Structure formats: structure tokens, C-alpha cells
Image (spheres, helix red, strand yellow):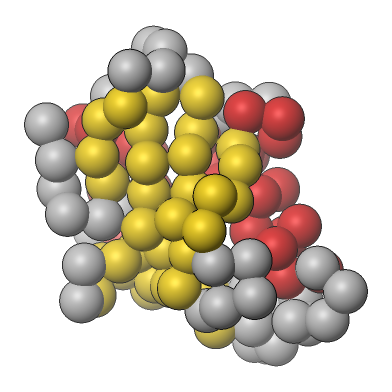
Length: 102
């Protein structure tokens, strides 16, 4: 099953994410242009925004930080992220990340 921005992998989930670093606060905006949009309070220097993104997603999905890996786009605003958690489904990720937006 796939939602465009979220697809199933054999060992978990792949997310397409677009970030806006240096925001006033970290918050989820929603799904736009095939990616989950997030604002991050962290600055895009020395990997701070990437670390903040991994930390945020791990907390939101209730998985260890080590389960969240940025596989593509380390230096870009648009990133591909893999979450290695066999029990996680596309529907569960959508509920946890987008369901809270209303």
C-alpha cells in the first residue's frame, strides 16, 4: 500500500518529506506535492536540521531514533526517510502523522 508520500517496505516504511528549517517552532504542515511538509526549529547547518527531523519523526511514530534513517537528500529540503519497524503500517503512519492535523 502507498499514499505517495508514504509507502510500505519489507522491514518498515519509506517517507517522502519536505522540510523548512529555521522556523519559529517545529510543526507538521501536512501533505503537499507528494511529500509530508514539516517546519523545523533547527538551523540547516552541521546536520542540526537532519538530527531534529530524525528525533521528531522517531518521537511521533514511537520508534527508537536508530530506526529512522535519512536515505536520500541529506543536503536538500526534500528527503527520503526509511523507518525500520516491521509492525508499522502506512495507515498507522498516516494516522500518527497526518491524523493529528484534523
